[in-house]
Every structure is written in structure tokens, then in C-alpha cells.
Amino acid sequence: MTATVARELVFADPGESAGLAAFLGRLLRWEKSAAVRIQAGDGVAGVFAKPARFEVLAVRTGRLLEPAELDVTVSAGELLERVDEKREAVGVPSEVTGPSWAGLLPPRAGWHEYAKAPVEAIGSVAAAAVGEFKERAERLGPDKRGREALDALAEEIWSRPLGRTGLPLRAAHAAHALGFLRGKGPVSLLEAGAWLRLRTPYGSVAVRRGGSGSGAGGLSVTPV
Image 1: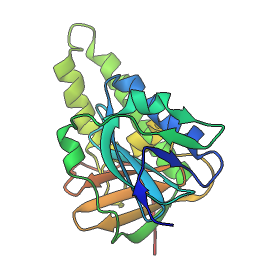
Image 2: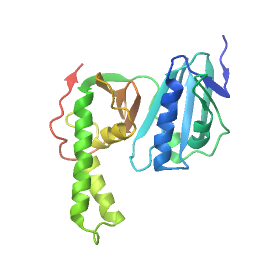
Image 3: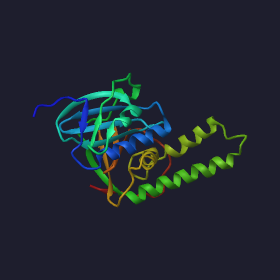
Image 4: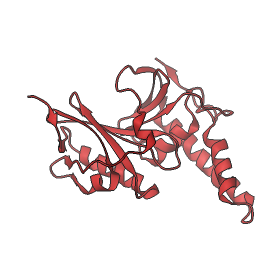
């Protein structure tokens, strides 16, 4: 079958549309005007987003029942409204002017898995860091807890390296907040050029190399 420019995407696997809806819903909690970029080709569709405040790119992919070619940036809210869970499909809304991040996405191919890490370990590190942020923010006191101070505290914590993975801790934080750190299987850590990626069955978080910081608490990885 010849691929066509799609105005609807139909998923091949049960639960994909519900997973997409949950992903979009979380994005919209942080930014009601969020946009996402959709790329479809070679039997797979990917929905890319930059969750507000996380400074990472997140992507949810799914296999397509029918071939489709698509590359558009759309409103996340409008896309959510067009999810049809019964049909495992989603309609594609009208294109919008994309934010600057949408012009620089991670590569679609060329990824190399360099390590695996237990999902429980990454989730624990992320949860501990969230707890640290809340505790230290409380210690600042109401008179010193302004946006500038909180932003500086967040940058200090989330820029730390995630153990020996090479990823910044913000990648684990985003994966945790987006609901990607579920189940019992290991998390795959991949690299491609200037990009690093944390991948689970529920979605991926990608960042460009160059994070800095001072340790994330003994997270171990298993080299491939």
C-alpha cells in the first residue's frame, strides 16, 4: 500500500491511543497552549513535545496500522480532542506555527544502546530529588522563596548527572513526571551523535550532551 499524507493516524496496537491521550493530558497540565510535532513514516508515528520547565524533549511512538507520511506541528489540546480510543485512532488538527524547539529534533535513526538501568532505581533517584527540592524550598522561607531562587535551586538539582549514565537528572525527572517509569523491565539508555536518550515502553526523554553537576546517588547501569 502506498503511503499518503495523513489527516488521521490509526494505531496497530491496543492501548496506543489511550497512552497518547495520557501523554498529552500531562503536557497540558503544565502548559495549556502546548504544541507537539508529529512525524510519521515507515509504519511508525512519533509525537514530540517539550514539557514546560523540564528542558528536555519527550516522545511517544506507536506502530501504525496503515502507512502514512506526516510531519506537522499542531496544538496538543486540539490533538487530544481528536483521540478516538475505541478506534485506536487520532485525527490530525490544522498545523500551527511551531515553537523553536520543534525545528531541532533528535535523529530518527542511528541510535546505539550503551547501557540499561533498573526502572526502580531511576524512579527512586527522581523521587528523592523531588523530595530534596521540596525540602530545600521550604527551608528558604516565604520571604526568600521567589521565582529566581526556586529556578536556581531547580537548575542546581536537575543539572546533576544521573549516576554514571551521562544523562542529566532532569531526564529522569521528566520521565517520572510523564508516567514513563512504570513496570518492571529495564530502562534503555541510548546515544546518537550529540543526543542521549532514556527509553521505556511508555515513552522516551532525549537531551543534548553537555549537562553538568555533582552526582545523583549511586545509580548503577549495566553496560551493553
